[in-house]
Amino acid sequence: MARKITPDMYDSLLREDLERYRTKAIDLGASRAKIVRVEDIPVDERVILKCQVPRCFGYGAGAQCPPHTLKPAELRELLKKYRFAVFFIMNVPPEVIVRDKETIKERVAAYQQLYKIVSEVESAAFYDGHYLAVGFAAGSCRHTYCGQQKDCQALRGERCRFSLLSRPSMEAVGIDVYRMVAQADWDIYPIGSGAQPADIPKGTLAGIVIVQ
Ligand code: SF4
Image 1 (cartoon, rainbow, N blue to C red):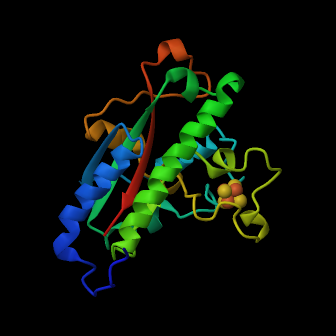
Image 2: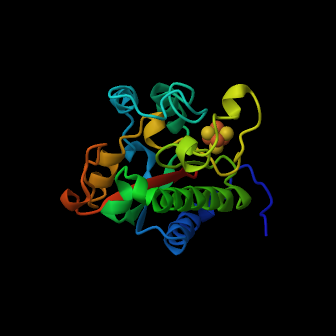
């Protein structure tokens, strides 16, 4: 049941709630999840430089991707107003994570699961009275949800086709996901367009919900 809104946004229950959201992420399919302080979220302009060089298919193609989404400097300022987040990863088989047409269905399904975890954890926090909770996912919603569509509807000024599910990715707003996973002491490997499954021990998708 939704909690009544309070001015302190249930500050005294925050730790307990964060642990519940961490467990919820695991229950929904995350491989690892942890509570992090916002000062441990690395935001770096060079991350979105990598959306342009080499150019990602999603760059400029969707409302949740650069250059249309929140800029790293804006995120850095906003994070000063928050204290805690729940960060999680989902392990994905190497043959699914690489850009291979053969595994596109499995890849889209993995990304959709990741977006679902983000939206459900964010929604749980919202209805618990942490109403400023906000989540970021992975990849691009242009590929995850609208890959079969000719364009992004939101970029035409119309309603996003998946407004409650689509989110900017962590990397789209400048969060250094590789560093963050490494800081958590979890395994992650660089995977580019030329990656071969045999050369990659595992694939990793990451998401975060900034709670309060
Ligand atoms: S319409 Fe599709 S591509 Fe555009 S923001 Fe929504 S989910 Fe993303």
